[in-house]
Length: 401
Image (tube, rainbow, N blue to C red; front, top):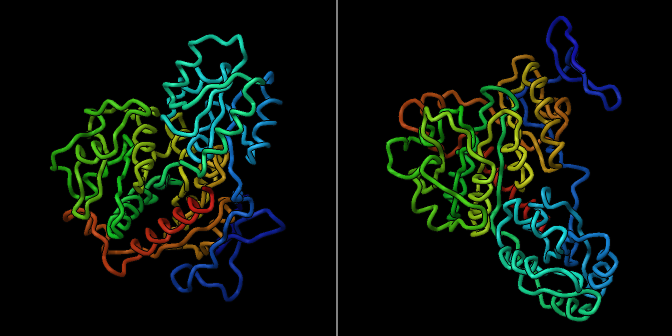
């Protein structure tokens, strides 16, 4: 709830309801004190060492599948084909049947190992052929093949999900600085010797190639790429793209094209790069739509970037609600200055997502961007924030696998 008062305004709290009011005696604005202790999501699910199986089958097979999963020592995870991209990537195994295999293929999910198809005796051969397209290794008829399914699940010894990490950055309002932070995260990853790619999905932005100072470099842009889900070779994609001075691959569009990126193309690039071990940084636009929804759901961490002002809090709160409807893996980076004295933890509480970090303003940054592209100074606020974002994403990826 927001209310105006005379004098400075800041977040104060009555129960669980954040409000805006006078700041208390002795409190100091951001930049005069270290950020409050970082808050972590209270509802973050930590997976155990037990193997997990994504089950997408009809009610006719539910009991049979539950029995074989339990016999093989698996925990069952259920999801709809159109909302299963993370589970598809992270579960140890996947079980599908005739009722879901076509829908799963239509959703553009990439091929993967550990996929088993189960069916009833009367299921036709087309179902088995479709399953092979998705990467299925074996097909079984239940209940006759229950023992064989248990054996197949037992042979899948470890999770085969992507080895990389995907981070999506989205602005809470115009001019929040999400694109700059996204570029910083990619540069930090490359400095560590990791393979990094920034996927620029903001067709109304200035372009990550311009931000990184490589707009004149040859290389493919979105308009020249035809990406089909599950058929992208990450090494070929890297080779075809322009790169920053630090080796960061940049997948962006040509200015003036006015053509938004298709969700299927964005997910194909993200899946391929993450699957090959890349650090994938997605620079998202501030708007609703299938593209933003799909990338938010697929990301290991979503970072909302906002300034420490009253209007930024109001706008960021609306954006945070939209993101939280798609994922619980969202945290906020608060950017200074704070002209009204709002502290980072207060901004996070008003917006309604955990605080990841806060960053001080850097007066040199805009001048640097105008004179040749982004480069991370050794002790810059941007470097520190980008490092925190990358470390948090890697931490979450390790916990959730």
